[in-house]
Image (cartoon, rainbow, N blue to C red; front, side, top):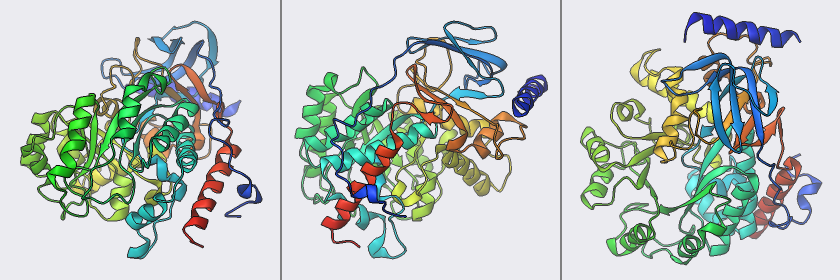
Length: 475
């Protein structure tokens, strides 16, 4: 970025600166899912004016004192002098694309920070034990909590990796929560927790969804995929179990996503086996992929598959460091994910992107290995490419859908503005996200969610968790 742009932005920001664990309400009856779905704001026409605009388009770059004109959910113009509709004053603000999250078990967010310090209380036994007790409304409450947190912290797209589909109603509950929040998302329909790895998953839920998807898609904001178990979980899975699931997703024309090579020094050769079994392609997303060799990277690149990595959970659970730089050196699409709040607690995507950058610099023993802007690309345009939606979102460009956020540096943690890209990556918290727009709808403005009743979301999640704890006799 040029020094003049920096100076203009700093001056603008300076001018802006001058001017109980369970509450009693958590014992109330859980609201019915359909009754608690909020009505979304209408799309309109507006222009965010006089902001520092980070387009995340390398051909466009940044615009100090720039504007973004939005009409009927589409970006009409970006740059200097754009105008039209309501004017939203962006003085001193940073405007950028909304964050694109690529793999999140939103259904288990109500177990936030539940993974403990002993093997019997670890992540996998925790989610298996509690997941088997979840009703459709429990799924709804957890996913709605996740969606509210996502919007609040600047995510405009999430990948709801729902590997606890116990019935069609459970899948529908996850989708209903996403639709009610107004976020852009993919629902990847998986298997139920506790299903033996000797048994193929029931295909009724995903087939029902695929057949009737137009009634679920929320005007195209939601898409459908398969959360596939793959060839390995606790141990190898037999072809007669995993192949019918994979083949059905291909028959339905759905993208497939799978956890593979998750532990850097234990889950070796799994990608090679996928490749040799002809189970990779442009419709396949590989989750984690920590234990990959240079030869396997070449296999992934040749197949056209994408990768999603989650530094926060991978470090927390001891899986190892994600090989982000090695992946970026190829043509493999890569995105960053939350994974699960059970392990990480916070779902602040800016924090995960910062951790991704810091991991790469630590591995390279260099302050300069991964730049701040490159890390932000991982959470915007690169994440969109990895999900196959970069033609719609991920950058601010005329013709794309209006998924964008406004960040206010008028707070103690961001008040001294230096380089905008570094500031956004290294200092942004959900409280600094002033405005969130998804498909032209303003879902957060002046720091407040507009389509979601936060107290209702919290009460519903607490009530759901209390019921699960009671049913599992956990105190």
